[in-house]
Amino acid sequence: MRVEAVELHRVAMPLVRPFETSFGRQTARDVLLVRVRTTVGDGWGECVAMADPVYSSEYVDGCEAVIRHYLAPALLAAGEVAAEGIAALFAFVVGNRMAKAAVETAVLDAQTRAAGVSFGEYFGADREFVDCGVSVGIAPAVEELLAEVAGYVDEGYRRIKLKIKPGWDLEPVRAVRELIGDTLLQVDANTAYTRADIEHLGLLDEFGLLLIEQPFVEEDILTHIALAEAIETPVCLDESVVSAELAFDVIGRGATSIVNIKAGRVGGYLEAARIHDVCAELGVPVWCGGMLETGIGRAANVALAAMENFTLPGDTSASNRYFAEDLTEPFVLVDGRLAVPTGPGSGVEVRADLLRAWASRPPLELT
Image (tube, rainbow, N blue to C red; front, top):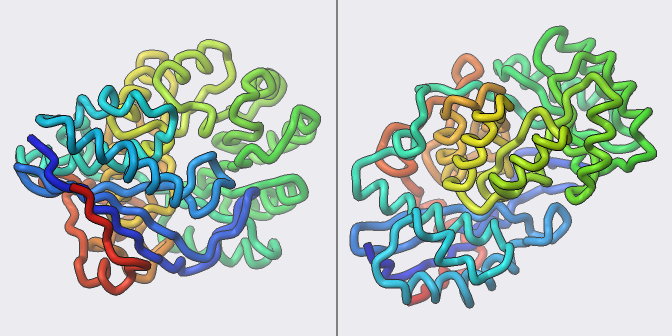
């Protein structure tokens, strides 16, 4: 197929409650959406970058600039394209994986819709439903945290993930473990700790955690190895794993025994599937991370999470975890699970009324 136009949409999406991590507090999402118009039909992709470069070096304005000035021109000039060739087409741009993932996903959506194939079928997924966990941000007080967690347990989520940071770890984790009993519990540090904290992090062992996620900065593989050797809780890498090659490397070095896969972080769903395959070959379980996606990104995440080696509940929460209304038909939790979309492509439809109502500026069309 040929791509005839690329549309860039910006949408302001308020969150139903603030979401706080070790690197900041969000009350809304500034969403960048990519729509490709091709000779076989349209496709949509969602950029997962945050408004500011505090989680990664990428941010929404930067991603839009990269797509506008580099990726879209290359795509429009390429002639016949397929999703499988997008990574090579964009290889001249260093990094910028979140921007690349948004465009590749839009192309994949158009391609699979035209073929009448769902994302789940394309990925080789083998499940109709995926188990869901929920990510719980840092709260103003333990009492407020417990009230929020209790609500998610009542809704049926099968795993609780707590954001932690120095000064907000042992007390909230202990309180939540006492509240939820044997329900799966894990923690996410978002790189907030240093080598000096290894002994302190070992104190988390008493809570029977499923894993501790990315306690140290992305590049510090040696300290993750040291932590994995020092504690009983499994160490999971997130931000450190940006490719299948990196996954192979850090697993082989003993830095991680579980991998969190976020398609936006690794450059797209095709690379995410490659990481899944590498981990499966090495006997390392994976789970699907989330970046507060709208239904557009959530649909693709749920399809990815239905692949065989996604054996742990992911951050594929229901739409109402983050948004009062979603840009697509809502994803609704049933018995702690979400249904994998079965329609062509992502299997969801963008709501044009909300796209217009929540637009923060007119769409930008590139031809």
